[in-house]
Length: 156
Ligand SMILES: [Zn+2]
Image (cartoon, rainbow, N blue to C red):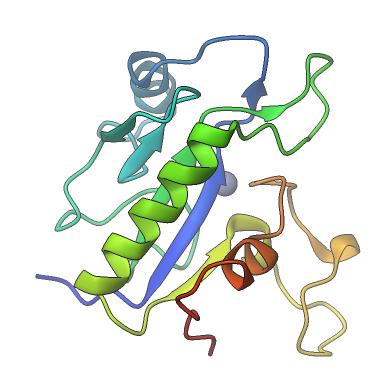
């Protein structure tokens, strides 16, 4: 089993008023040359958690961090006009918490962050600021979501 020390949250960057199934995701990722869905888990708008890649297999979701991480993606991330937005439904928020808590039991001490939080720290002040984000994904602040849970995440 590979070493896991990071969980990265993503959005599918699809519009909140459209359905984007795990099958659509599979087709999209294969077109990009991936061997199946690059994320390990996919959370549908109704809260369904789909296992889309075995954790033992290295993911294809964040450049430079795939070897030691788990990728979780939620369906959505764009408003009806295609602009980045936190479109998570209450079911998705709940499923995300449950999934993260479960993974924290299996991989204690894991760091948890959003895709955009792994953008390069251009001004070197130790914080990844909005103007440094390469992309908006996952379109919400993972840090503030985690501070609402009883389990304090282990930040590096
Ligand atoms: Zn992403």
